[in-house]
Image (tube, rainbow, N blue to C red; front, side, top):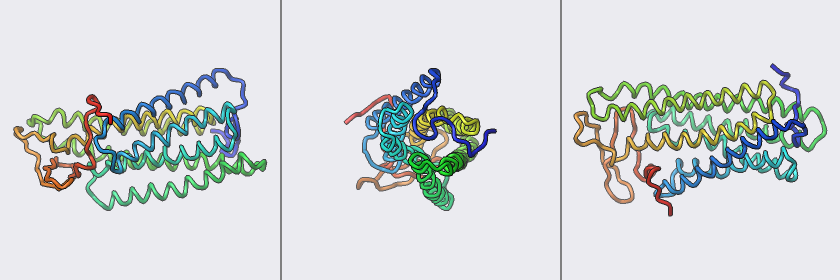
Length: 311
């Protein structure tokens, strides 16, 4: 394990190395991340019938104002294609929206599986607290190390970079862990004789698999950081978050489908309970599968990805 206070190439200012392979690698990673994010933005705008709700805005802004500026900023910074202050500012804005925004995406749909309001409140407090205690000091250290020649700023940034990566990774481990634990419980809920047993379990296994995969991607970023592969770690992070957002978009939409009224299986031998809820001035029956909370249809009003409805 390398010295946490050491400063590696690319951490301060542009990348000055001569490795063509590394240049091609981080350019490719950032380009794929940029493509993924722009594609996701188009899918979001074409998929949602109504552009509102925490889920919609957190998902949209995480991609559009998160991954996109983050990927562009590192291309500009490492290749010295723009003033350093501009690259750093763009990177900082993108980092805020990308990391904390992605956590809010997970939080916005956590109520589909976790019913305890105390747990949901604590998760939200954790996200807000981490955003303050991790984003702000890291931002200060970033500008200090890049615009002040004092080596103490460089060491402070190097240490803070690892602290924030560990902190945000632990945050994601907790949220993904909640999804995973509740999903395992829900896998035991639907009777095997039910006609919806297969589709229900497929969705639950998908939720579980993707959250485990998200945790593994965070582990990879941590390993890259502690091996001091700073340039690859920062560029890979943009790609990882673009993949996370696309996976979450796909699986959370399927999860939402389980609680939408038009997904009720009225002829099934195992009937989900139903309860009326008022949305947009009209009565809707919201399916309440065991293990799922009732969700207002106005906040989960999406259509299948296979049937885009661009405005």
